[in-house]
Image (tube, rainbow, N blue to C red; front, side):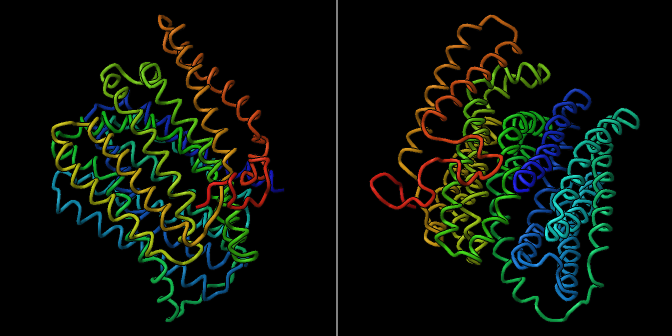
Length: 491
């Protein structure tokens, strides 16, 4: 059953992300660069508002209901009130953005509002299904959303008109329909909600730090689009967004697919077995994330040019090859922060410390962005993103490991370093040998070489790769409870 759950959650995250990745690439050929830039801004704005005002509700429900498959009527009613309030706040913020930046008004505001509403409904339905541990239904809804969003997004552009509004509306309406279906299925197993007048103080105490941190995180990760749009216009956003998607999505296919399964496991481990057991899970988590996401980031950096030449229109390729390596590592740093170290703040209810860890990189990102992006364009934005993400990762690691310490075996670290080095050298050699071939051949040959050398070296170093399907936190074959000895790095 555990194997099945890992596969279900991996598929539930893989398919939507892969569909989004394909959609973003297809739209570069169907929309003008200006319309593509506006579409990218809609997605960015919608994600910012959804994660900032509503993402914490999901974490609160999962944390407070991790032991109960069926929440009480009062807790359910409280979750509904929080969801509606967060959605209304998001819609108000969308209207405020149109006032602050008039170029992002009209159909843009309508698109963002529909996007926010659709994903609020979807998030509620998926959270309730996850609380009930109905993993198959959760995966089914997400997989269907990924497939239908791709079809409807492209279909709307082809059937209605090639504009950002048509593409956005196609995605949002499918999401709204599936979110409504998920809610209907989940509520069949739930009591009739009771809306209590009390109990919101604890929820807000949990959520306000997360909202603050999320806003800071968006400053690090997404503000560059708005600076680019203001300084250089939507076409520059389109160039940057295409390269960003090409580098970011492959990394997040793995990190985002693991976290929905690993986070509830970490919560249960901490609540039932204590800090030491949760620390062992964290140790395995970071090894797995580095092993998977690090490999993808390094591969993208090594093969950025043939990758861009293969999938992007000619007008995008040169800038994409410059931007992609920086974005790949920025995404790696963000994944380690978000899906490993930040989880310690959530399970220990010390979310304000996460805010402290995010303040310096947010300030750095804002100041450097305003100073350098108008002159340096997309490449400057990518370099700033990588640097800010690294500072953010360092701050989160420093503070979170005081709350949930763990150790990582030195041999595991050495095995990763050696594997990365040998695989990278072999891939560069393959690129030299295939230098005159088509981009597809170079990309395929380089990727196959990297995977073969990387996997064999990891296995020889002591990693049990098959455990990723069963116990990803035990991917290292060493002791299950490492100690801070000469053979371990202690955090």
